[in-house]
Every structure is written in structure tokens, then in C-alpha cells.
Length: 110
Image (cartoon, rainbow, N blue to C red):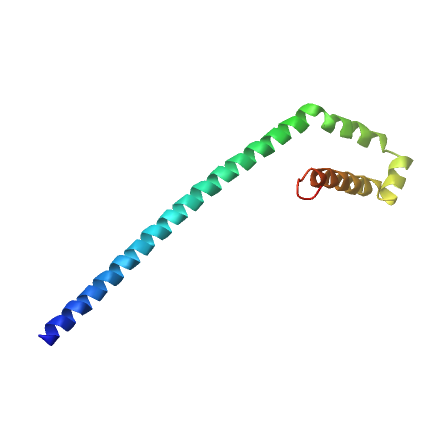
């Protein structure tokens, strides 16, 4: 009788361990699926925002203005502007002001 009970409880614990492992696999699979779709939705939103920003910058005419300004830096003026790193300084200052503008709009910082 003891061998039968030992065998029964042994098989019962194996079956319970199998069910627990299967349940954990199902939960992990569901979590992976949910995470995948959340990531997909997030990337779609980010791509949409980037597309809007890109189209706004393209429609604003900033590219043609930059080309016109770049054309002014030719000859001696271009040599000295390049010597004193004016284009890099202008890009750094523009980026710094843009970042400052964005940071000031954050509700937790401003």
C-alpha cells in the first residue's frame, strides 16, 4: 500500500509541475505577445511624429534658405568662416537653443 501511495504522489507532483511549467510558458508567451504589439504601436506613433516633423520642415523652406546662406560663404569669407569653425558653431548654437526650447516645455522641468 505504501508503494502505491508513493507512486501516486510522485506522479501527482510530476503532473502538477508539468501544469505549472505549461502555465508559466503560456503567461510568458502572452507577455511576449503584448510587449511585441505595444512596441509595434509605439514605433508606429514615433514614425508618424517623425514623418510630420519631416514634412513640416520640408514645407517650411528651411532647406532653400540654408542653401542660399551656404552660397554666401564662398571665396575669402568662406575661407575665414571655415577657419574659425563658424558652421560648426552655428549648428551647435542652434541645437543648444532647440534643446533648451524643448526642455523648457517639459512640465516637470519648467
